[in-house]
Image (cartoon, rainbow, N blue to C red):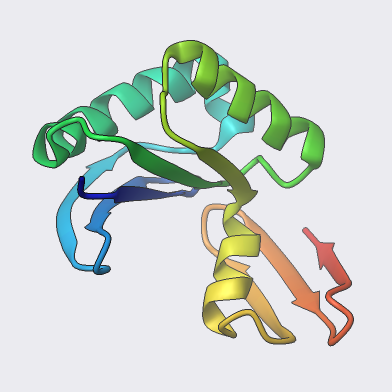
Length: 139
């Protein structure tokens, strides 16, 4: 059975979702509006995910899919846990992992190593991580 993963990068202005197979090959991309959880709320997030994920799930044959959500407005554990629960209650059968879009950008920019990022888009944030995996953010 093929294993699939979907990664969503949800910022203040737009959200992009990418479906990859177990070899890391991109099989599909979809785009939608703001993914800022604080702005669009629970119902808005589920509506956005429905629009973004439906075409990607069709491509995957609806096999077991892991979902990673990197969302603006989801920077605290209470928000991340709420979103994970919400998505599972919505009916998602695969694994779900939620991070802030800033944390995903930090980890991606430095391949998990210590570093610093500054984002100035719809929102702004500076975030860094040291060699003890301690992080700090402003914005």
